[in-house]
Length: 230
Image 1: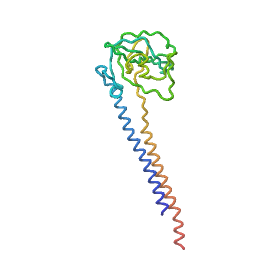
Image 2: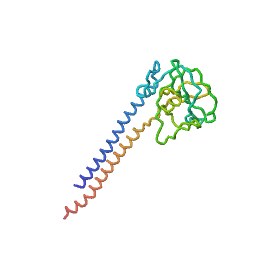
Image 3: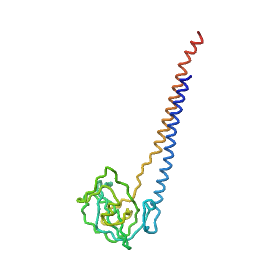
Image 4: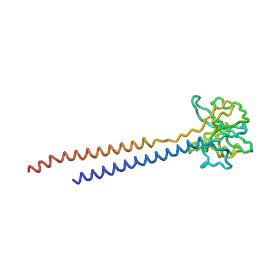
């Protein structure tokens, strides 16, 4: 009897823990879906103009259309895009009519076009404001001599190009044969799969506990029968 109670206790605690982890993943799923829905809404919610003090918290992903002049200066961020493969994002200063200067992510050129001369010039750009978080402890330092960057580092790039620390990622074409690479949201959302895994483990744990109890009960019956005969 004590053995059965111990098995029930361990089985119940294990199943409760696994179910709790599954419920937690469902809560995380709802939280993550809320974030993704908020980002999707921001990406299509156009600002009437560029705010005086754009901030990451209030304005990241917001859509805006701005007119200005693209300077020929460029910073090249190593990346890849289908179907071309390896290439570079072209980051240039974008000067608005009121004199404000922003970072403009014009989009992608293949590796072979890195040194192609691009003139820039007047343009009306529709794009999204972005403060990319692409730098990790493993990101190499930029190579100024070869003009190769390995992440879009807004603060450092703004200092290099003498602009505000604000990046506009073009949705529309900016000329010079550059293909726009609009903002895309790549936030992993595997919480449903995790929840199913935890609930499946809980079901398996419960099944094994029940099987163990049934086996123990069957093994005990012959012993009880022998004791009754004696």
